[in-house]
Image 1 (cartoon, one colour):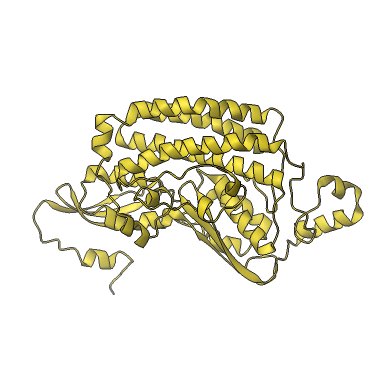
Image 2 (image 1 turned 180 degrees about the horizontal axis):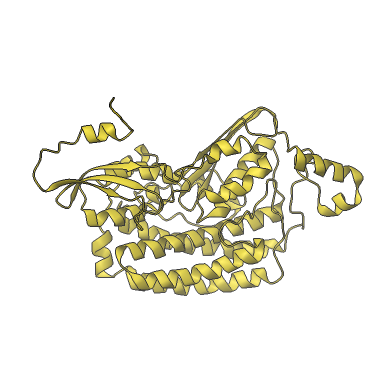
Length: 408
């Protein structure tokens, strides 16, 4: 009996009767530069990659199936574990999709807070990308500097929601808490100091000849290939395609804010690095516009929809009907109308969207997460061919993939 697996066709196509220069190696799933549990099966001719096969599934936890066996509110903390570098982006994308299904909208103050958290979350994610990508290529100092600023940003997240990595900072219908006293002042100090630190990063890397030699003309993705492979975010904008969901399909307060969408026509790893730096500057610009908006809004934090959203704590503690309603929502879960919805958002890595099909039950009949890292991982089988083994690490780093949202 012949034992086969999903890699059998790949190995059958390899001709092992070749010169001594030909070999097949495993890159990962334990390699520190694999950015998670990525296993790459690489066929090499000397140091040149002739075939690449991304083998995924080593971190699979069945998150989408879990969503179909949990009430809508129960599932929200699980979304933290998708792109665990940018938890708030996942929380928001899911909550926003459920809100569209319910036909409700968060109050304006909640929208201000959410947009602030999303952009702070984007800065945290981009700093992590910069630190780890530079370390992969061999730049140690930038890793320490970028993590220093990231810690300050995570302090702000912790002050708001009590968590540094898995935030659960958003709720279906709004946010759980108003901003703590002094939080806006601390945020303002952070974003005022960040441009100087970004200039430090750029001074260390942008014109560094070793950095440029490792990134320029490495991992080239044309605009056509980026679209064909379903690339989004910086992977798409780095190939000259100007597309950002915050502009194309504005949500929260993005339609009212002034900010630019950086685009590069370099199509290589260096161009993508430059875009991440520019995007942090745009996030600073957005947050500066949001800070004065907070004090101009009413203090309501959750949407008023008694059949779906619990009443404020004051009402639950003083009104019998509100208490009963809250008890039913917690023990049995909300029952959205029958229907289906797909809502995209612009996460730090690209288009993060949730498809939800409801049969009117407390559990989603079907939930599907459209995660950008999944598509960018698939691209590797084409992107790595023709490159050298030393460039594989650079290319994986520049795609900025996280396997929490690949192996769902």
